[in-house]
Length: 221
Image (cartoon, rainbow, N blue to C red; front, side, top):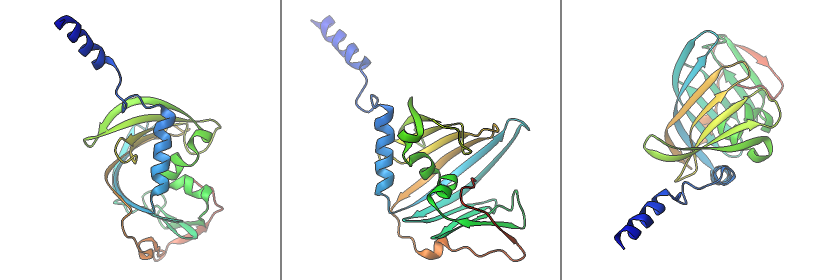
């Protein structure tokens, strides 16, 4: 009897739990649903860019703010800034293009090029082949990992691996590889859902002496 009981316990231990048995579609669907419920968000992050061609690695931190329907602010401690003020997208990247500000209309197309959540969670099952890549902990929080491969070639990335929080279904980490081999690793170190944000948080002032370069929507960051 004891042997049968022990065997039963072993078999139960080998069975996947409900949390671990989620399909890739179920994981990405709950992330999409959680994203749709957000009226605003604030996230602190750490980003590492690796260029395999030069062997260089650059790490920076920053804060991203998002407020529906079309407000976005990404501030890096390097001084780079991406701002959508409701109608216009401003890209100020002094670390790579000093003295220049790119201005373009802020549309759904331009949003997917600069906003990671929109990039991954805008109709993902239509745009990507989604597969499960296991589980892991990010900052002590359990997460499921999905891999996204574009069904059609695009200028944003060739593949992405995204860590989806088991509790609140937010994106906690992602790895992206672009067509030129550049690798972007981003870890969300703190996340706040639906904080009060006013429009002044999304106001951009062109730095003195900077040249404004107008571009059509659709550029990527």
